Amino acid sequence: MAFKLLFDLKLLVKRHLLSPLLNKNPVEGFSAGLIDDNDLYRWEVLIIGPPDTLYEGGVFKAHLTFPKDYPLRPPKMKFITEIWHPNVDKNGDVCISILHEPGEDKYGYEKPEERWLPIHTVETIMISVISMLADPNGDSPANVDAAKEWREDRNGEFKRKVARCVRKSQETAFE
Image 1 (spheres, rainbow, N blue to C red):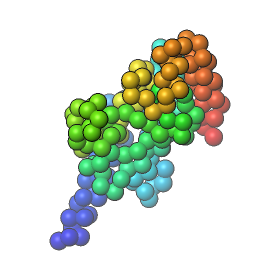
Image 2 (cartoon, rainbow, N blue to C red; image 1 turned 30 degrees about the horizontal axis):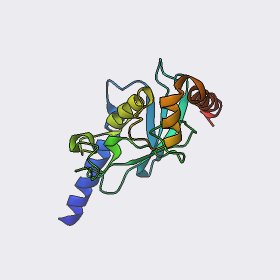
Image 3 (tube, rainbow, N blue to C red; image 1 turned 135 degrees about the vertical axis):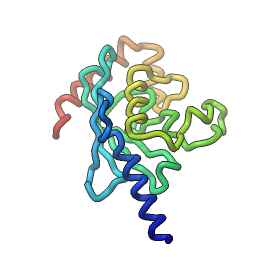
C-alpha cells in the first residue's frame, strides 16, 4: 500500500510539473524543460525579456529546483545568466512572493495568499517572474544596490547595467 501511495504521489508531481509543457495555450516569453530527463526536480528555463521593458531582447537562463515535498513547498529559482534587478540577489537567486514559504509572513509584508500555494505551476511561476522583470518591487529588494539605482537613477546607471546584462545574455544564450 505504501509503495502504491508513493507511486501515485510521484505521478501527481510529474503531471503537475509537466503541465506547462502540455498546455495547448502556452505563455509567451519563456521556455522550460528538464535539465536531466531522469530528474523531475531540476528545470532549466529561458526567459525572453518582456517587450517595452529595459530587459527587452534579453535571453536569460535560470534554474528551478523543486523540493522533494513539492507542491507543498515552493521551488528555488536562480538566474544563471547575469541579471541586474532589485528582486534578484547578486548570486542570481530570485526573491518574489510566490516563491516564499507558505503561510504568514513573520515581517507582515506579504499576505498569505501572495506567498506559495500548492496550485502554482512552472507556468504561474514564470508569469510572475516575467511580471517582476516588467515591474520590479523596490520596496522589498533582494539586491539593495539595484533597488537604489532603480529608484534614484532608473534611466542612468540602472539602465546601463541592465543593457549590459541584456547584451551579454544575447551573446551567451545558446552556449
